[in-house]
Length: 191
Length: 181
Image (cartoon, rainbow over all chains, first blue to last red):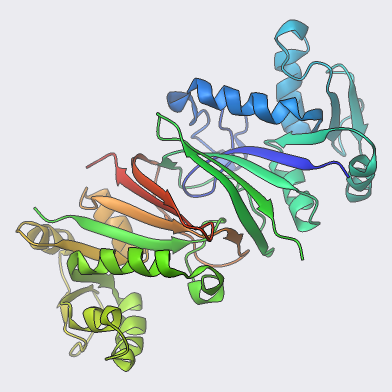
């Protein structure tokens, strides 16, 4: 069974919205976009490298997929996901032509993701995609969380975990980066 | 100048309410040592009314149970409330007006740290006025799905990571200093 590994940038109050730029996701009037930028450190990139090395697919919500597509479709050489199969979940997208090797999932999300996990292959990585993420957490489909925890409170914004779902976790790694960012990995404890 | 420390048990989804529903699986010797060292380094507790009402009922009943309970009971407390009427028990004093000025005066002296457990309206006020020296979070490896959250209604606040340690249970201790300190 393939694992789904979720990577998120997260604030001290659990917010994951628009870590990379002010325009990335302004839903709910979110005004703090780009909050990770002052804390960049090359170790963050190295952590991504470790995660991607064991993966061959990317599973994303529409908004995160569109962001990545805009950045990487014109620039195949700089695309860290080159060679990855991409799966985008959306009920509004007409096609997944915007980024090479992408497939659209427009219905039966939980069933489709279960199918993906049962196919042969390496791990499936997710980042951002807060709405899809909640669906997967609610259905116990996430196998690992890789979190970069930033030393700030944002005060509002979309959160990692959905309301109403208890998830027991096991800490597998915790490291401190020189910029005050923590890198933590957790796996759900399944009984 | 005494340090004001806010210490909170928090879940992976930032919940601080009803920790009794999710902390007990993770309590061990490391936890007891950490909590005890922190309490014995403090010589005063401050809290809002809601915490006071819960603590003043629960802790006296544990008198004599262990050194931690006795310390909780014997420390002087300051309770911030605009609405409280009548006397306080549990070695507590009321701060009714100008909590910012009163807390600044309490800090302006020598002695151990001043400790606040939990995080609520009082925390927000003190943070806005640059009176909080440290936030200490004990992060439990469980998302609980409901309840009041830490930093509720607090605006964007950068922090400096001071210290971190990991217990064998997967609880992670994080000490942060707000940037306005």
